[in-house]
Image (cartoon, rainbow, N blue to C red; front, top):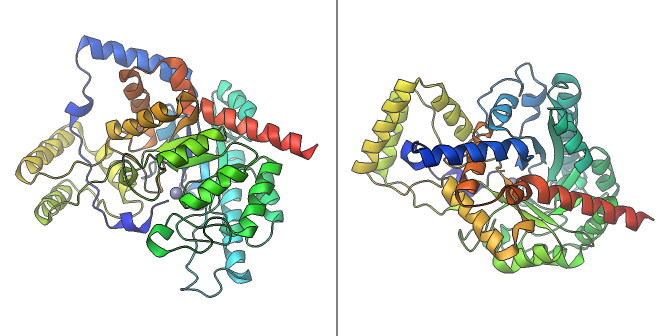
Length: 435
Ligand SMILES: [Zn+2]
Protein backbone atom coordinates (compact mmCIF):
# COMPACT_ATOMS: atom_id res chain seq x y z
CA UNK A 1 0.00 0.00 0.00
CA UNK A 2 1.25 3.43 -0.92
CA UNK A 3 3.05 5.41 1.76
CA UNK A 4 1.86 8.99 1.96
CA UNK A 5 5.21 10.51 1.09
CA UNK A 6 5.05 8.92 -2.33
CA UNK A 7 1.63 10.28 -3.18
CA UNK A 8 3.26 13.56 -4.02
CA UNK A 9 6.07 12.19 -6.12
CA UNK A 10 5.57 12.58 -9.82
CA UNK A 11 5.42 9.32 -11.66
CA UNK A 12 6.53 9.51 -15.23
CA UNK A 13 6.40 6.38 -17.23
CA UNK A 14 8.30 6.30 -20.44
CA UNK A 15 8.00 3.59 -23.03
CA UNK A 16 11.28 3.86 -24.80
CA UNK A 17 11.20 0.68 -26.77
CA UNK A 18 14.99 0.72 -27.07
CA UNK A 19 15.30 -0.31 -23.41
CA UNK A 20 13.54 -3.62 -23.92
CA UNK A 21 13.91 -4.06 -27.65
CA UNK A 22 14.28 -7.65 -28.85
CA UNK A 23 15.42 -7.46 -32.43
CA UNK A 24 18.59 -9.48 -33.04
CA UNK A 25 18.54 -13.28 -33.55
CA UNK A 26 20.36 -13.68 -30.23
CA UNK A 27 17.59 -11.74 -28.53
CA UNK A 28 14.96 -13.88 -30.25
CA UNK A 29 16.65 -16.97 -28.90
CA UNK A 30 16.82 -15.49 -25.42
CA UNK A 31 13.15 -14.59 -25.57
CA UNK A 32 12.25 -18.11 -26.67
CA UNK A 33 14.22 -19.62 -23.81
CA UNK A 34 12.65 -17.21 -21.33
CA UNK A 35 9.19 -18.02 -22.68
CA UNK A 36 9.76 -21.76 -22.20
CA UNK A 37 10.95 -21.18 -18.62
CA UNK A 38 8.09 -18.81 -17.83
CA UNK A 39 5.59 -21.42 -18.97
CA UNK A 40 7.17 -24.07 -16.74
CA UNK A 41 7.61 -22.22 -13.45
CA UNK A 42 4.80 -21.23 -11.09
CA UNK A 43 4.89 -17.43 -10.96
CA UNK A 44 3.55 -16.22 -7.60
CA UNK A 45 3.22 -12.55 -6.67
CA UNK A 46 3.07 -12.16 -2.88
CA UNK A 47 1.46 -8.74 -2.64
CA UNK A 48 -1.45 -7.32 -4.64
CA UNK A 49 -3.92 -4.80 -3.23
CA UNK A 50 -7.59 -4.67 -4.14
CA UNK A 51 -10.86 -3.07 -3.24
CA UNK A 52 -13.73 -5.45 -2.40
CA UNK A 53 -15.92 -3.75 -5.03
CA UNK A 54 -13.52 -4.92 -7.75
CA UNK A 55 -14.01 -8.49 -6.62
CA UNK A 56 -17.74 -8.59 -6.12
CA UNK A 57 -19.19 -5.65 -8.07
CA UNK A 58 -21.01 -5.88 -11.38
CA UNK A 59 -17.76 -4.90 -13.10
CA UNK A 60 -15.06 -6.95 -11.46
CA UNK A 61 -11.63 -8.51 -11.97
CA UNK A 62 -12.95 -10.97 -14.53
CA UNK A 63 -12.86 -7.94 -16.85
CA UNK A 64 -9.93 -5.84 -17.95
CA UNK A 65 -10.59 -3.01 -15.50
CA UNK A 66 -8.30 0.03 -15.32
CA UNK A 67 -6.32 -1.75 -12.62
CA UNK A 68 -2.87 -3.28 -12.66
CA UNK A 69 -4.24 -6.57 -11.45
CA UNK A 70 -7.22 -8.32 -13.02
CA UNK A 71 -7.70 -11.82 -14.41
CA UNK A 72 -7.20 -10.92 -18.10
CA UNK A 73 -3.91 -9.19 -17.21
CA UNK A 74 -2.92 -12.13 -15.02
CA UNK A 75 -3.59 -14.59 -17.83
CA UNK A 76 -1.75 -12.48 -20.42
CA UNK A 77 1.28 -12.17 -18.15
CA UNK A 78 1.43 -15.82 -17.16
CA UNK A 79 1.07 -15.06 -13.46
CA UNK A 80 -0.01 -18.30 -11.77
CA UNK A 81 -1.03 -17.13 -8.32
CA UNK A 82 -1.13 -14.25 -5.91
CA UNK A 83 -1.57 -13.20 -2.35
CA UNK A 84 -4.49 -10.81 -2.11
CA UNK A 85 -3.55 -8.25 0.51
CA UNK A 86 -6.17 -7.97 3.24
CA UNK A 87 -5.05 -4.41 3.89
CA UNK A 88 -6.59 -2.33 6.64
CA UNK A 89 -5.53 1.30 7.02
CA UNK A 90 -5.38 2.93 10.42
CA UNK A 91 -5.87 6.41 11.73
CA UNK A 92 -3.34 8.08 13.96
CA UNK A 93 -3.96 8.08 17.67
CA UNK A 94 -3.54 11.86 17.60
CA UNK A 95 -6.32 12.23 15.03
CA UNK A 96 -8.78 9.85 16.61
CA UNK A 97 -8.78 9.05 20.31
CA UNK A 98 -10.72 5.86 19.61
CA UNK A 99 -8.35 4.55 16.93
CA UNK A 100 -6.74 2.15 19.38
CA UNK A 101 -9.82 1.50 21.49
CA UNK A 102 -12.81 -0.80 20.98
CA UNK A 103 -14.57 1.37 18.36
CA UNK A 104 -11.48 1.76 16.14
CA UNK A 105 -10.61 -1.93 16.40
CA UNK A 106 -14.16 -2.91 15.52
CA UNK A 107 -14.18 -0.75 12.41
CA UNK A 108 -10.84 -2.21 11.30
CA UNK A 109 -11.99 -5.77 12.01
CA UNK A 110 -15.13 -5.27 9.91
CA UNK A 111 -13.08 -4.03 6.97
CA UNK A 112 -10.74 -7.02 7.22
CA UNK A 113 -13.71 -9.41 7.27
CA UNK A 114 -15.25 -7.63 4.28
CA UNK A 115 -12.01 -8.17 2.35
CA UNK A 116 -11.67 -11.84 3.34
CA UNK A 117 -15.28 -12.43 2.29
CA UNK A 118 -14.81 -10.60 -1.02
CA UNK A 119 -11.86 -12.82 -2.00
CA UNK A 120 -13.78 -15.98 -1.05
CA UNK A 121 -16.86 -14.83 -2.96
CA UNK A 122 -14.85 -13.93 -6.05
CA UNK A 123 -13.12 -17.30 -6.12
CA UNK A 124 -16.15 -19.40 -5.16
CA UNK A 125 -19.04 -17.61 -6.87
CA UNK A 126 -17.87 -15.09 -9.45
CA UNK A 127 -14.94 -16.75 -11.19
CA UNK A 128 -14.73 -20.36 -9.88
CA UNK A 129 -13.80 -21.58 -13.35
CA UNK A 130 -10.72 -19.33 -13.42
CA UNK A 131 -9.40 -18.94 -9.87
CA UNK A 132 -9.47 -21.00 -6.68
CA UNK A 133 -8.53 -20.27 -3.06
CA UNK A 134 -5.33 -21.96 -1.85
CA UNK A 135 -4.14 -22.55 1.70
CA UNK A 136 -0.82 -24.32 1.15
CA UNK A 137 1.67 -25.31 -1.51
CA UNK A 138 -0.17 -28.55 -2.30
CA UNK A 139 -3.26 -26.50 -3.17
CA UNK A 140 -1.18 -24.13 -5.27
CA UNK A 141 0.34 -26.97 -7.31
CA UNK A 142 -2.98 -28.78 -7.69
CA UNK A 143 -4.86 -25.67 -8.85
CA UNK A 144 -2.05 -24.67 -11.20
CA UNK A 145 -1.98 -28.16 -12.74
CA UNK A 146 -5.69 -27.75 -13.55
CA UNK A 147 -4.96 -24.58 -15.46
CA UNK A 148 -6.52 -22.22 -12.92
CA UNK A 149 -5.09 -19.32 -10.96
CA UNK A 150 -4.62 -19.74 -7.20
CA UNK A 151 -5.52 -17.11 -4.64
CA UNK A 152 -3.78 -16.91 -1.30
CA UNK A 153 -4.37 -14.23 1.32
CA UNK A 154 -2.10 -12.18 3.55
CA UNK A 155 -3.13 -9.59 6.11
CA UNK A 156 -1.38 -6.24 5.77
CA UNK A 157 -1.49 -4.61 9.21
CA UNK A 158 -2.23 -6.41 12.46
CA UNK A 159 -4.39 -3.49 13.57
CA UNK A 160 -7.73 -5.35 12.99
CA UNK A 161 -6.68 -7.99 15.53
CA UNK A 162 -7.49 -5.33 18.12
CA UNK A 163 -6.64 -6.62 21.57
CA UNK A 164 -8.17 -10.04 20.95
CA UNK A 165 -5.61 -12.80 20.42
CA UNK A 166 -8.42 -15.13 19.24
CA UNK A 167 -8.65 -13.09 16.06
CA UNK A 168 -5.29 -14.43 14.90
CA UNK A 169 -6.87 -17.87 14.75
CA UNK A 170 -9.99 -16.45 13.14
CA UNK A 171 -7.90 -14.83 10.40
CA UNK A 172 -6.03 -18.08 9.89
CA UNK A 173 -9.32 -19.90 9.51
CA UNK A 174 -10.51 -17.27 7.05
CA UNK A 175 -7.47 -18.11 4.93
CA UNK A 176 -4.68 -15.74 6.01
CA UNK A 177 -1.28 -17.30 5.49
CA UNK A 178 0.83 -14.27 6.32
CA UNK A 179 0.25 -11.24 8.49
CA UNK A 180 2.38 -8.11 8.62
CA UNK A 181 2.34 -6.72 12.12
CA UNK A 182 2.19 -3.06 11.08
CA UNK A 183 1.47 -0.77 8.18
CA UNK A 184 2.57 2.89 8.06
CA UNK A 185 2.25 4.09 11.64
CA UNK A 186 2.69 2.32 14.97
CA UNK A 187 -0.12 0.12 16.19
CA UNK A 188 -0.90 -1.95 19.26
CA UNK A 189 1.51 -4.72 18.14
CA UNK A 190 4.70 -3.02 17.05
CA UNK A 191 6.53 0.02 15.77
CA UNK A 192 6.29 0.87 12.10
CA UNK A 193 9.16 1.92 9.83
CA UNK A 194 7.58 5.40 9.92
CA UNK A 195 9.12 5.83 13.39
CA UNK A 196 12.37 6.82 11.67
CA UNK A 197 10.54 10.06 10.93
CA UNK A 198 8.04 10.23 13.82
CA UNK A 199 9.84 8.60 16.77
CA UNK A 200 9.11 5.30 18.51
CA UNK A 201 6.25 3.96 20.58
CA UNK A 202 7.41 0.50 21.70
CA UNK A 203 11.05 0.32 20.65
CA UNK A 204 10.19 -2.76 18.63
CA UNK A 205 7.35 -5.10 19.57
CA UNK A 206 4.71 -4.43 22.20
CA UNK A 207 4.11 -7.15 24.83
CA UNK A 208 0.91 -8.06 22.94
CA UNK A 209 2.83 -8.07 19.65
CA UNK A 210 5.15 -10.74 21.10
CA UNK A 211 2.12 -12.88 21.98
CA UNK A 212 0.78 -12.44 18.47
CA UNK A 213 4.07 -13.64 16.94
CA UNK A 214 3.97 -16.75 19.17
CA UNK A 215 0.35 -17.39 18.20
CA UNK A 216 1.15 -17.03 14.49
CA UNK A 217 3.95 -19.59 14.92
CA UNK A 218 1.57 -21.94 16.71
CA UNK A 219 -1.08 -21.63 13.99
CA UNK A 220 1.20 -21.64 10.96
CA UNK A 221 0.84 -18.08 9.66
CA UNK A 222 3.99 -16.56 8.18
CA UNK A 223 5.15 -13.47 10.09
CA UNK A 224 5.57 -10.66 7.55
CA UNK A 225 8.03 -7.91 8.51
CA UNK A 226 7.40 -5.51 5.60
CA UNK A 227 6.35 -2.13 7.07
CA UNK A 228 7.69 -2.83 10.59
CA UNK A 229 10.58 -0.88 12.09
CA UNK A 230 14.04 -2.38 11.96
CA UNK A 231 14.00 -2.95 15.72
CA UNK A 232 10.63 -4.73 15.57
CA UNK A 233 11.86 -6.80 12.63
CA UNK A 234 15.05 -7.84 14.45
CA UNK A 235 13.03 -8.78 17.55
CA UNK A 236 10.67 -10.85 15.41
CA UNK A 237 13.62 -12.62 13.78
CA UNK A 238 14.94 -13.46 17.26
CA UNK A 239 11.58 -14.58 18.66
CA UNK A 240 9.98 -16.48 15.80
CA UNK A 241 10.20 -20.26 15.96
CA UNK A 242 9.54 -20.41 12.21
CA UNK A 243 10.98 -18.69 9.11
CA UNK A 244 9.76 -15.13 8.56
CA UNK A 245 9.10 -13.23 5.34
CA UNK A 246 9.10 -9.70 3.99
CA UNK A 247 6.13 -9.86 1.61
CA UNK A 248 7.02 -6.66 -0.28
CA UNK A 249 10.28 -4.84 0.50
CA UNK A 250 13.54 -4.10 -1.31
CA UNK A 251 17.24 -3.68 -0.46
CA UNK A 252 18.12 -0.59 1.52
CA UNK A 253 21.73 -0.72 0.35
CA UNK A 254 20.47 0.20 -3.14
CA UNK A 255 17.61 2.54 -2.20
CA UNK A 256 17.79 4.15 1.22
CA UNK A 257 14.16 4.35 2.35
CA UNK A 258 12.78 3.11 5.66
CA UNK A 259 10.47 0.58 3.95
CA UNK A 260 13.49 -1.34 2.71
CA UNK A 261 15.73 -3.76 4.59
CA UNK A 262 19.41 -3.20 5.30
CA UNK A 263 22.01 -5.98 5.10
CA UNK A 264 21.86 -6.74 8.83
CA UNK A 265 18.09 -7.23 8.57
CA UNK A 266 18.38 -9.35 5.44
CA UNK A 267 20.96 -11.61 7.07
CA UNK A 268 18.78 -11.95 10.19
CA UNK A 269 15.81 -12.87 7.95
CA UNK A 270 17.95 -15.49 6.20
CA UNK A 271 18.97 -16.95 9.57
CA UNK A 272 15.31 -17.76 10.27
CA UNK A 273 15.19 -19.61 6.95
CA UNK A 274 12.93 -16.91 5.52
CA UNK A 275 12.59 -15.05 2.24
CA UNK A 276 12.45 -11.44 1.05
CA UNK A 277 9.94 -10.90 -1.72
CA UNK A 278 11.66 -8.05 -3.54
CA UNK A 279 9.04 -5.46 -4.47
CA UNK A 280 8.77 -3.71 -7.85
CA UNK A 281 7.75 -0.43 -6.23
CA UNK A 282 9.34 2.47 -7.99
CA UNK A 283 10.09 4.62 -4.93
CA UNK A 284 11.66 1.67 -3.08
CA UNK A 285 13.71 0.53 -6.06
CA UNK A 286 15.24 3.85 -7.01
CA UNK A 287 15.37 7.28 -5.41
CA UNK A 288 14.62 9.55 -8.36
CA UNK A 289 14.98 13.29 -8.25
CA UNK A 290 11.65 15.08 -8.74
CA UNK A 291 10.98 16.58 -12.17
CA UNK A 292 11.69 20.23 -12.86
CA UNK A 293 8.53 22.32 -13.22
CA UNK A 294 9.22 22.67 -16.97
CA UNK A 295 9.51 18.94 -17.42
CA UNK A 296 6.43 18.27 -15.30
CA UNK A 297 4.44 20.78 -17.36
CA UNK A 298 5.63 19.31 -20.67
CA UNK A 299 4.72 15.80 -19.54
CA UNK A 300 1.31 16.95 -18.33
CA UNK A 301 0.69 18.63 -21.71
CA UNK A 302 1.69 15.44 -23.54
CA UNK A 303 -0.69 13.39 -21.41
CA UNK A 304 -3.46 15.86 -22.19
CA UNK A 305 -2.74 15.69 -25.94
CA UNK A 306 -3.14 11.92 -25.86
CA UNK A 307 -6.11 11.91 -23.46
CA UNK A 308 -4.10 10.13 -20.80
CA UNK A 309 -5.00 10.51 -17.13
CA UNK A 310 -2.82 12.12 -14.49
CA UNK A 311 -0.11 9.98 -12.97
CA UNK A 312 -0.09 11.27 -9.41
CA UNK A 313 -2.03 9.56 -6.66
CA UNK A 314 -3.14 6.12 -5.65
CA UNK A 315 -4.71 4.18 -8.49
CA UNK A 316 -3.55 6.71 -11.07
CA UNK A 317 -0.63 4.57 -12.17
CA UNK A 318 -3.07 1.82 -13.12
CA UNK A 319 -5.43 4.20 -14.91
CA UNK A 320 -2.49 5.74 -16.75
CA UNK A 321 -1.13 2.35 -17.78
CA UNK A 322 -4.59 1.28 -18.95
CA UNK A 323 -4.88 4.54 -20.93
CA UNK A 324 -1.58 3.90 -22.70
CA UNK A 325 -2.69 0.37 -23.59
CA UNK A 326 -5.80 1.76 -25.23
CA UNK A 327 -3.77 3.93 -27.61
CA UNK A 328 -3.49 2.65 -31.15
CA UNK A 329 -0.04 1.55 -32.31
CA UNK A 330 0.27 4.77 -34.28
CA UNK A 331 -0.76 6.97 -31.35
CA UNK A 332 1.57 5.10 -29.07
CA UNK A 333 4.49 5.64 -31.44
CA UNK A 334 3.63 9.34 -31.56
CA UNK A 335 3.42 9.49 -27.79
CA UNK A 336 6.82 7.82 -27.42
CA UNK A 337 8.28 10.24 -29.94
CA UNK A 338 6.87 13.12 -27.93
CA UNK A 339 8.39 11.71 -24.72
CA UNK A 340 11.74 11.39 -26.47
CA UNK A 341 11.57 15.06 -27.42
CA UNK A 342 10.71 16.04 -23.84
CA UNK A 343 13.63 13.97 -22.53
CA UNK A 344 15.93 15.95 -24.82
CA UNK A 345 14.51 19.35 -24.03
CA UNK A 346 13.92 18.91 -20.30
CA UNK A 347 16.06 16.00 -19.13
CA UNK A 348 14.87 14.35 -15.94
CA UNK A 349 15.67 11.46 -13.69
CA UNK A 350 14.29 8.34 -15.33
CA UNK A 351 11.72 6.46 -13.25
CA UNK A 352 12.63 3.03 -11.91
CA UNK A 353 12.48 0.33 -14.55
CA UNK A 354 12.69 -3.43 -14.70
CA UNK A 355 16.49 -3.37 -14.68
CA UNK A 356 16.59 -1.26 -11.52
CA UNK A 357 14.15 -3.71 -9.94
CA UNK A 358 16.12 -6.81 -10.93
CA UNK A 359 19.26 -5.12 -9.55
CA UNK A 360 17.61 -5.52 -6.13
CA UNK A 361 16.98 -9.21 -6.81
CA UNK A 362 20.63 -9.64 -7.85
CA UNK A 363 21.79 -7.83 -4.75
CA UNK A 364 19.67 -9.96 -2.41
CA UNK A 365 20.72 -13.18 -4.16
CA UNK A 366 24.41 -12.27 -3.82
CA UNK A 367 23.98 -11.46 -0.14
CA UNK A 368 21.63 -14.28 0.88
CA UNK A 369 21.84 -16.98 -1.77
CA UNK A 370 19.16 -18.04 -4.22
CA UNK A 371 16.98 -19.77 -1.57
CA UNK A 372 15.97 -16.60 0.29
CA UNK A 373 14.71 -14.27 -2.41
CA UNK A 374 11.35 -13.92 -4.17
CA UNK A 375 9.24 -11.47 -6.15
CA UNK A 376 6.29 -9.15 -5.46
CA UNK A 377 4.65 -6.21 -7.23
CA UNK A 378 2.40 -4.29 -4.79
CA UNK A 379 0.12 -3.72 -7.79
CA UNK A 380 -2.83 -1.46 -7.07
CA UNK A 381 -1.12 -0.43 -3.85
CA UNK A 382 1.42 1.91 -5.46
CA UNK A 383 3.70 -0.73 -7.02
CA UNK A 384 4.96 -1.09 -10.58
CA UNK A 385 8.06 -0.10 -12.52
CA UNK A 386 8.57 0.64 -16.19
CA UNK A 387 8.55 -2.78 -17.82
CA UNK A 388 6.50 -4.46 -15.07
CA UNK A 389 3.70 -2.02 -14.65
CA UNK A 390 0.78 -4.41 -14.50
CA UNK A 391 0.19 -8.14 -14.27
CA UNK A 392 0.09 -8.51 -18.08
CA UNK A 393 3.82 -7.64 -18.21
CA UNK A 394 4.88 -10.36 -15.79
CA UNK A 395 6.84 -12.27 -18.44
CA UNK A 396 9.27 -9.34 -18.69
CA UNK A 397 10.62 -10.21 -15.23
CA UNK A 398 11.51 -13.74 -16.31
CA UNK A 399 13.02 -12.37 -19.51
CA UNK A 400 15.29 -10.03 -17.57
CA UNK A 401 16.30 -12.84 -15.19
CA UNK A 402 17.21 -15.07 -18.14
CA UNK A 403 19.13 -12.21 -19.72
CA UNK A 404 21.18 -11.97 -16.52
CA UNK A 405 22.04 -15.63 -16.63
CA UNK A 406 19.66 -17.13 -14.09
CA UNK A 407 18.94 -20.79 -14.79
CA UNK A 408 15.46 -22.32 -14.82
CA UNK A 409 15.89 -23.91 -11.39
CA UNK A 410 16.88 -20.56 -9.89
CA UNK A 411 14.02 -18.71 -11.58
CA UNK A 412 11.60 -21.34 -10.26
CA UNK A 413 12.81 -20.57 -6.72
CA UNK A 414 12.57 -16.81 -7.18
CA UNK A 415 9.10 -17.00 -8.74
CA UNK A 416 7.46 -18.70 -5.77
CA UNK A 417 9.40 -21.91 -5.06
CA UNK A 418 11.12 -20.31 -2.08
CA UNK A 419 7.97 -18.73 -0.72
CA UNK A 420 6.00 -21.98 -1.00
CA UNK A 421 8.85 -23.83 0.75
CA UNK A 422 8.76 -21.31 3.60
CA UNK A 423 4.97 -21.57 3.84
CA UNK A 424 5.22 -25.37 4.10
CA UNK A 425 7.95 -25.10 6.73
CA UNK A 426 5.93 -22.61 8.81
CA UNK A 427 2.95 -24.98 8.69
CA UNK A 428 5.10 -28.00 9.53
CA UNK A 429 6.53 -26.22 12.59
CA UNK A 430 3.00 -25.27 13.66
CA UNK A 431 1.92 -28.92 13.53
CA UNK A 432 4.95 -29.86 15.66
CA UNK A 433 4.09 -27.13 18.17
CA UNK A 434 0.48 -28.24 18.37
CA UNK A 435 1.43 -31.83 19.21
ZN1 LIG B 1 2.45 -2.23 1.77
